Image (cartoon, rainbow, N blue to C red; front, top):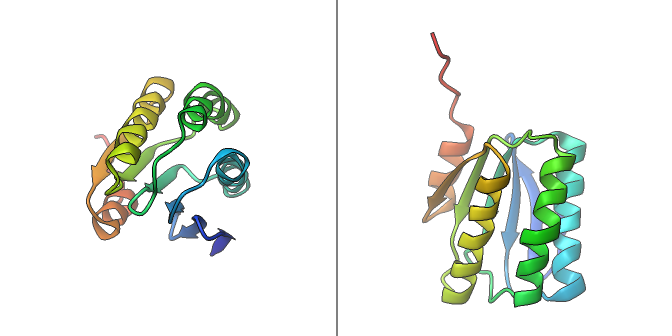
Length: 137
């Protein structure tokens, strides 16, 4: 189901995964609106598995990156009450976006118990995100 479709970002769900797919450059208000809409989806659907697809994302402005790591992520993790289990990340081909994406992932791992993994393509990421959890015996 498509939740938000902008020229620079698509937010949707597929199976039990909340997907944020960056398709271009977004700055300031547009960038932040995307993250706020993603949090709204996460809360409404109680999604615990995220796919952050930065494949076609462009450079993330330093102010927006700082906002994401210093404000949005701490707020999102607290609001979701630790209900983040897995985060799959597909890195951008843009070197600057790739660095920013890794900083965001590092912040997620510091703030939550989520398992984080990097992938080259969506197929592998979705396979990992949707695999049944092993039951401890």
